[in-house]
Length: 520
Image (cartoon, rainbow, N blue to C red):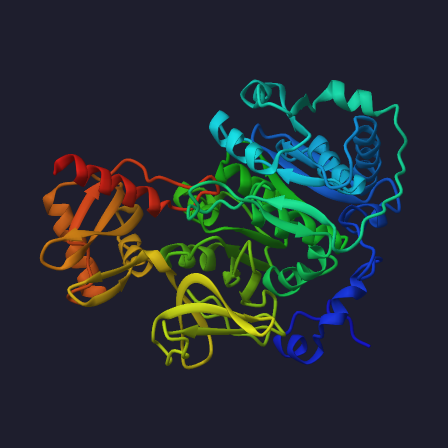
């Protein structure tokens, strides 16, 4: 019987996929399963097999073996037990990728506790909100962040650096896991901006099995790949697709630690001989704007992205630089990855700018507000059929005549002006095609005559003035339609971003509302 990793071809995936085959990759069962065992311990067969390569921002490299993580995470599990941490308790981990980070994350899950990764750039308020939501028994972090994390009632803050690792060295390097597949294993905070207060998405140990859909068809991971994902493991992409998925398949993964530098990333891609890269759209855009890609030699065979659509200019950069198509991988933290472009599949045509097609076994539709399916080219809401019902994603999209899905922005990113419905994403994409535009963000703002008009915020390589604004308006109108262009343009030095690097349109809408209120 064929294994699902035997080929990357689209026809093979459609013919061979069956949900029960995902369990062939694991030791555990539907009753008893542990993520730490599946991702780490069972691959620690010798002392040299690499689990993670870390490219540090300061130029140094760190190679961490499966054995090192297996031993250190067992010690962490014993350490937690001795401190009274019980199965089901939360253990927050606010560390950059490093041996202490992986030891803490997998050690918490070995213990049966719930690991909660936190972004290392959170300030005191960001930490407080998430800690108040997940109520951890212990928060493991650096000396630098400990002060910002301190003073929260009921939470023990521990500096997880060299002295802590030395303390662990006296503890045993084996730990008997006893978790059930449906026990909670991870709390994952999203980087989105739709919630007033942070709320964790809760994952069981069984989630690692479902994650194989994204690994096999979204990032196209196969044995023998040299994989890299620069996204922080505090976020869904970096943790699920950049860490758990490759490690579960026994594939060495690479990651980035510290302040992001696109040149440092490209140096690592060259030095590590990376063949499979999965990154956020922002990472590719920053590589393009660095102007340094020509300084490096790449061995990329499969390439994927997630987080937000990639503009046309960056897609052209990817084609010219890496020589392989940019494969979108679409999903949400809540529903997982559902639309993919099958990286590495010789028989799958990647349509530039599309989200691809559903992963095997899933049904997706674009629907009107009344629940009926949209016609090809008609914009509606992307929905997933699960457990007998259509689940909304809160994202807009459309399907073309060939069955490919296309993103049209968040539901709240639609702009209706004088009866015309416009997509912020489409207008942004056109603005980014202008040679002098570095970044753009588009929102709808109130207008007495039209209800709403399009306002664009532009980061440009030249000074912004009325002449440049009209040039951009004409540039957009000529490429979309006579009504589909920004009637207002604001030139700014930077755009607000979410912690994961996505453009924060919600912050722009709120700032515009406050400005209008002040002017009233």
